[in-house]
Length: 365
Figure 1 (spheres, one colour):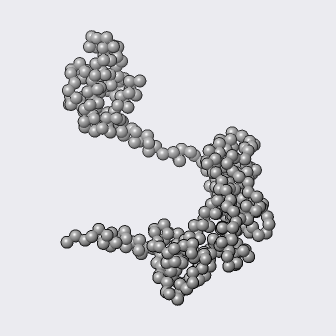
Figure 2: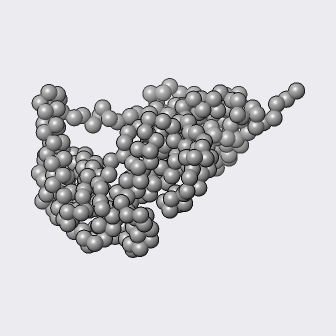
Figure 3: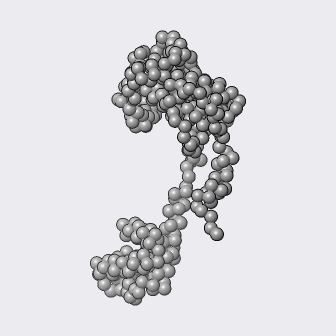
């Protein structure tokens, strides 16, 4: 008797592996539920998806770090921070990749060139930065609170859902703050002079320093974020430069771009051309395409199928002298024979037919 599909899926090896690797949760007892807090009403308990379980494992791996503020300890903190404080416009970062490519070209051509502030980036006021950091750190504060409640035990379904909810809010605001200050990394990268460091590596180090700055910045001290982040980014550049210098001292061999180049595409193309040529030769030799004697003679001489590889194929005029016709007539015979070969190739293998057509067109040109 066949088992139902849902039973087979639940007992499959993949399902058992996911069950072993997933972080378990437990059902909350009635005493643990108690009265629901305003923050907990934001999240309804629901079965966790695979993405939820991955986020939960990341949350439970270590205590969540945050920058505390007196605003977080008020009874209506969530309502005040997320409902009463205005939302800050998200930046448009579509400029980032094209500008990075342009800067790398400019960097190679003229290291003293200056590029203006990219269009689409925005400059936040101190009040806007405070709003973003309050929302970012409060979400991390709520995650830490639930982690403290759980201690070393397992989270309930509602606790897991609420932690995932606040974790994703924090991640969203962290991404927004970093994207708003991407131009800061580029500005700092253009100020330094490190001949041994690639510009892309420098920007990558700056982006990592920017993310660490977002995690550690305290907006309650009244300073602008750029004041704190610029110093952190420049220190990251300095550490990376020292590390690169030590590496070059230990391994003084110059970089060879040839080692980074793969010939995979050339190998695949050569193999395809060789297979196509062998298939065409097989069709002509076995006369699978039903060619006439004149057509076979023209194809053999025009493409060197029956001549040594070191001897070049004959031209249209040379083949015409050989069979006693004009070169225009040889062209017509050749085109008719190639059409027959193409039809035979398509019947045998459409992929080889396309490859052979490209090879023949290249030869004719």
